[in-house]
Image (tube, rainbow, N blue to C red; front, side):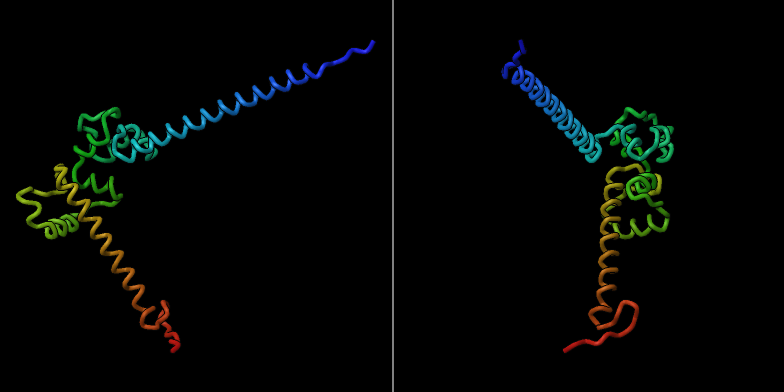
Length: 177
């Protein structure tokens, strides 16, 4: 006699497979959401200067000791587990500029800053080795304003030849009326 398979056995097998697929999809979804939240929290922490020195150094592709040496903080008593803000507080103005803009602060740049800020600096003695956070914040604002002015001047210089009917390579163009 031939064995008969009931449709119920097939449905039970399909039901099990469907449940397994749904569970796997849910697990993968939870993992993806968790990683996204974790990445966002880490990025927010780094963007808001709440990171540790080790975390910041890692984003720059270096070890905490290298970070501390690069920014003149080797003998500051700071460790990799200290906050990035602690490092900013102890950085000299020259190292702060190197860190925040990637450029070297020269004596000429410092003199220009002191002239531009004048009375706003008060009686603070400003040198390349200044660690005063107010001075560093004022320098950041000054540098940003100076950069914006330079960009505006460059843009105006690029727009001038076009407005005068001159090609950027110096050749005059015909102006239609």
